Amino acid sequence: MKHFRTAGSAAWTEARMPDQSGRIAVVTGANSGIGYVTARELARRGAYTVLACRDRARGEAALDRLRAEAPAARAELRLLDLASLAGIRAFAAAWDHDRLDLLINNAGLVMPPLTRTADGFEAQFGVNHLGAYALTGLLLPRLLRADAPRVVTVSSEGQLLAPFDLANLNAERRYVPRVAYGQSKRANVYFSAQLHRWATAHGLPLRSMIAVPGMTDTGVISKVGHSGRLWRALVPRAVHALAKPVVNGARPSLYAATAPDLPGGSYIAPRGPLQIYGAPAPRHGRRTVRDRGTAAALWELSERLTEVRYELPGRTAPAGG
Image (tube, rainbow, N blue to C red; front, side, top):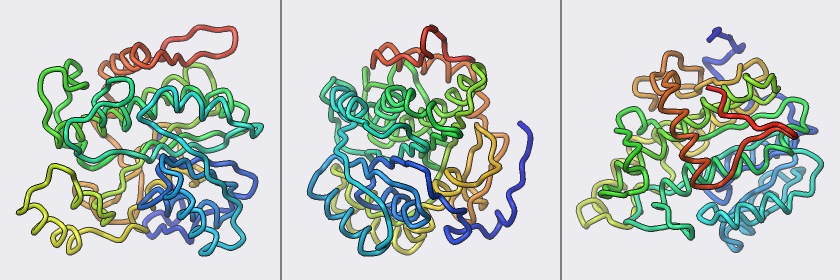
């Protein structure tokens, strides 16, 4: 991949974002945490921003908060349940804007007890990966109506150490919450990289980016449903002491979404060791990004499980690997 430089990237913050007026954006999981900050900052810079949330009450509260913090923002709430393929299809079918410029696949589950989605998928694999795959594919016609569409898929630094077993993505044999979470976040990287290859193979202007927040104090880790007394006693304190504020965690997503000269396929993460701290910047040489074979196999599996195919009008196309 050619290395691009973005001016001032070493000190990049949301204050350096270019004007986003005229763009229409969707941020999934925008009711709290990184998703909320991402949506707020895009709206603050002029993007018409859709908060795609599962829970109406929490979504409405987030929208009210956004409007209070960014009074000039143009934003709306739309309900989206990524744990239901029918819900994803309904969201895409109801899209009534003429196009979509930016989709940020941010929503995700973190280490719940073994749970299944409405369609029978292990919840982390189903929501974190299959939900993002299906939503992007179903919104693809709207994305391709934009002049310079982008898809940003949010992964995690946890994917660096996660094993990846294509035969156990759906907890077919056993379920370990942290392993399933790591697999789902690695799947996000494989998906985003393969989407970039697919778009490139067809000469499309769509750019697919990967964003990794780094250790962020969103409160999610300390609330995992299976956590015991020791976890509840120690982890919240450790996270609060070591993790960065949520606004810092949103910066890789915002950078990936708005830096004008980023090429498709970019992997944006904090500059520091293990992608935990530091300003957002392109990270090159990631093994997961280069693994075309696993990415293509996952794409084919995702297509079969969701029955969502990435096709151009009048054409049938593979994943472009």
